[in-house]
Length: 404
Image 1 (cartoon, rainbow, N blue to C red):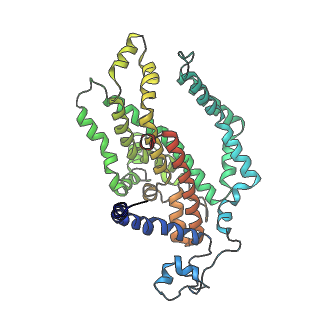
Image 2 (cartoon, rainbow, N blue to C red):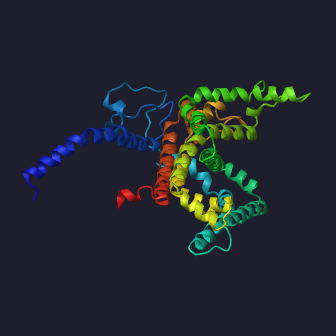
């Protein structure tokens, strides 16, 4: 039995957390419910309002609450028939025979890397390693490249891009993340190792200078416009090359699919390496120097110390950073929009070479105004990112201490 004091404590706690619960209900739960309902409808530019005579819309639709007059050029929007039409339109192309074969071929390329991970995991349990982890990973990478050449990975990638706009932008975004993460980590690690050198003078100055791009990310739009000017046809890069080479014809970097993709990666690297550098530098400073001294006594060179001491001990620090940065890079929009606006465009109605997930969603919402379709778009992304977050928590064990 709970006494009066127990009820009073419960009410007191509820009064304290009531504002937070109300905020979660209004700003999180309700938008999720409304967006899920909209994803099942044909709401769009010509059907902006529902039929408020239906009781269900009086529960979830604010225009019905507020008594706004109906507007639009067509009938009020309603549930689709079939009800999952928006979802099948977005994902239907992925389940065709050609798309499934392309996915299987691309996943097969990862098999050598998985084997390398499995072998390293088994060897880590032994007292001595006959082969270093770096060589095993190198063999896995070479195997993945050779396998990709044998099964014609570019053709499989092209076939997957033809499965629909939704599949295209998501595949390109995943590729973008896979290209960015190694660059972020390696650049941040190299700079962290340099700043961690005890013989380097002026370390505080270099730390401040190197952290400026990350600190300036709050004004990313302005800085990105400067990067855009660098790569214009009459921009800084072409002028510098033209001054060094005779008869040089300026290159329109941002109008080339390959160059535009590479430039977006470069600019995002500029904004992000500082985050990796600072975090990894903190991890390096927590590693006892006695371990390196003992390794030197045993005859371990710099590379052996890096692969056997530094990288394994940095894993608890590096994994959460990589996961967090991966999720942030996946939903990046401001930098890409300011730099290329998703272009260059291959044709009418076709997503551009740098039209990643959030850029595509932004253009679809404000250009086609197919709100029901974009509601399904948001639901699918929410489920995918939520699953990725749960898996990352298990992989990094970042909440292990809090739950034990």
